[in-house]
Length: 90
Image (tube, rainbow, N blue to C red; front, side):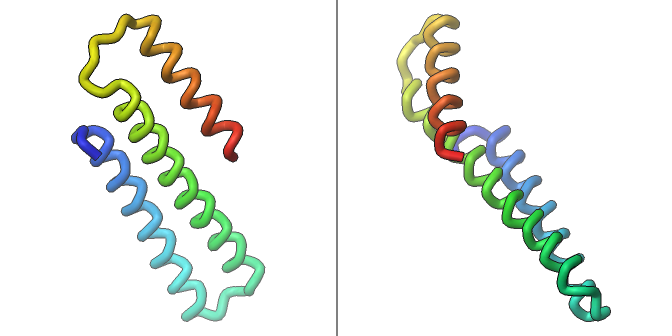
């Protein structure tokens, strides 16, 4: 994860997930209903998947771009292709 911006975004998302997990712990301790806990767990699972997709997308773009000079059109084509792959994988 070479760029600082990518690293910051991933860490922010992970801290958000961590907060959700703490909330679920409180729900369990307070005897919240199983259905409400499962809803929150589903939200966390979705958040984790989104972080993984974000990392995958950024990594793919960085690896494909490498250190080569690209025109804005080439960069757009590459970004579109990566987004199509990720959309297909969802």
